[in-house]
Length: 172
Image (cartoon, rainbow, N blue to C red; front, side, top):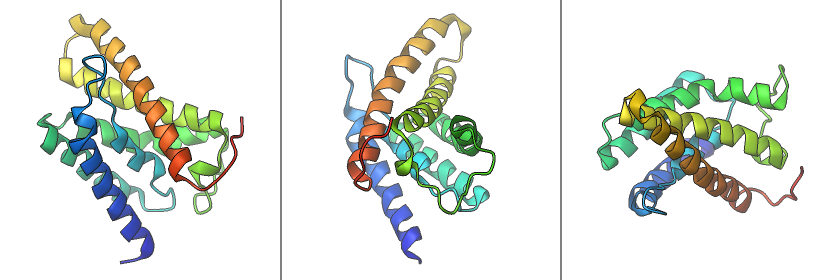
């Protein structure tokens, strides 16, 4: 097992445990539940095979669903954002020829990180809450929960990227 695979396995287990044991028990304002496990999707190296990445993300979402008893909605949402991750990144960075081997999310500007993480977080939460409520009668609830939970998750994810990443100054 290479150093990268060991790091990814450790990050996978750590984020699943953190999500299940800590984050799922946080109910800020009664319903806000941050999904910090999405960091795995954001920080996964772009140079790795896409099919492997999609399978690992499926297992990540399925693990969260298993412990949260949520019936597969996190697996569906996680695979969806894993699938569109590279396309969203290319649009946000406005680069067609992104160097996949050298790319590090931590080295991008704060605004690029906020847009990238925010877009994927909003998409993830919209899918989760749409599948959870599964009715257009609850569209206002879906959008309200999506926005508020996405903002809370976005804050924690960007804070984690900067706190646990390589030392760097903020670039706007």
